[in-house]
Amino acid sequence: MSLATSLERRFMQLHEALYIRTDGRVGHRMIGVPTLLLRTKGRRSGLPRTAALVYARDAECFVVVGSNHGYDRPPAWFVNLEADAHVQVQVGRVRTDGIATVVAENDPDYERLWGLVNKTNHDRYDAYQSKTSRPIPLVVVRPA
Image 1 (cartoon, rainbow, N blue to C red):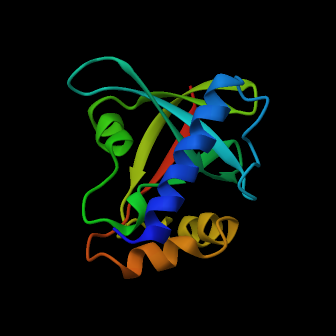
Image 2 (tube, rainbow, N blue to C red):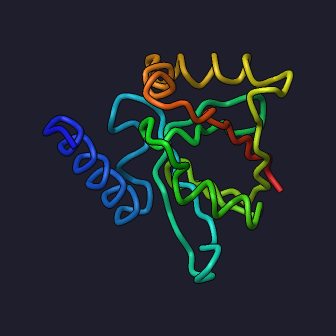
């Protein structure tokens, strides 16, 4: 892992910890893009898990990306929601229960949603996709 990647990961961990510890008072736009907290249930442990993720809005839904920074394996939160689609989204201090749906690259809405969230994240997802042969999935969370 390069020094730049290591520093980026540490910063992201600090951002997530601050967002969680302040219960959303700090963190929503801390990294220059809108960020939410996605709460899932661990697929093996059953324990609550939280991840800070960049998101875009599509009407009342939230769109997040299972990029894992372009690594060849999906992020843990993604595997957790595949096992149990009931999630909670926190934007700032507002929490919303939701149902997560995976949008694969062959879905008719994939390109539109990818463009929406990629633009929100300053085209970083295109860069992540170029690092892996794994098709990066999108997740749409609809309020329950």
